[in-house]
Image 1 (cartoon, rainbow, N blue to C red):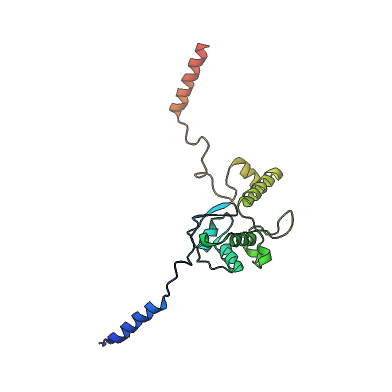
Image 2: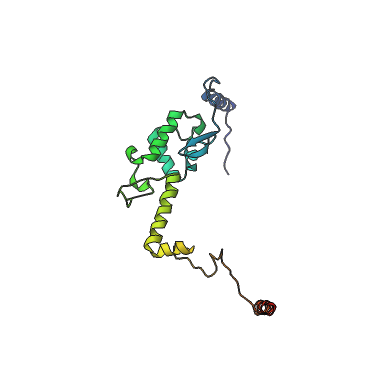
Length: 193
């Protein structure tokens, strides 16, 4: 059997006073108005979200990449995107376009050893779509296995196709009754001629 310790009432009151004193109030004059929609790298982003989550709305920016961009920029990841000035947004765009200049490791980039240049590049936004389209077009042109599968609209990574990926084609079992009915309609057409 244990005994319960009763806390003195004085200590609880001191803790409450300490918590109240710990939170300083922000003056209302310093608070900026937030922009609700912010345009970054050709994408409209929600200005109400924290910076680390908001820039994930750009195509090609994952959580780890957004964290690396924020660390390179020196901004707080929890501040709202809408509170940034235009020059701050341009700085973030520059970091996203040129991550190798800001010591972001090469393993984070989405285009390593590019075929044309041989460099590590990070594509984002519409550049990522264009690069992907050209890659698929190259595979189709050289008639690789993946290119042929892309051309036929079939899966390229070895999935089974017996029961899945059946969209867009006539599928199902053709029954004798349907065949017989089609045969009758063809005979009627021939008789009319």
